Image (cartoon, rainbow, N blue to C red):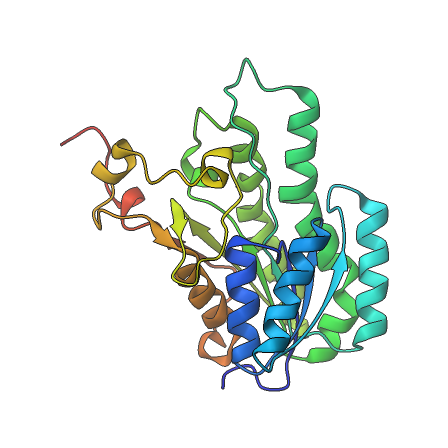
Length: 261
């Protein structure tokens, strides 16, 4: 097992990529602290891990609220004096173009998608330093690189994670802490039946739009378990010399110039 004896913290662990990663980390021997705003669903994640013989706890937290993040961090530091992996996975998405994006939606995107990863990483730093070889993983998006005109606030907020990854890798390298980012796209499936709730159309169970399928070389949506596997790679010693990097999981979509076929 790749994470035996490791203490890990995963935000947005109630559903989707977060739940899939919590399941996988627990199977690989980690103790998992699951953080999410949705009390019922995050408790369900923990119960399922425990029923499978794994070790997990949860803390209900609204990551848009710095005071709640500070409380969560104190609880994590009381829980473990050493944290080996932090997966800043939580995110929100409200579909709106530039002219229709409301300021309160913009501010909440920045708070959850960008400020929370920065603040969680900073406040948990004493325990991450104590690990001696910790891994911080940000969950980004391909929209962070190119921008998506239908999700302006989401694109901008996720975009900030890329330079944040680079500067954190520089700042934290002397402590043996690696910092990397996963940029995924069109993650809409789960082999385990895990609910995916990032966007309204996902909560409604809608499939991959035809336009996305046509511009994706693999011709299918991604699975939350595939992103979890990438997170495991970045969390484990398999990526021990990798830091400041952005890993792309999008079925090849950003590898092509769109509109040429």
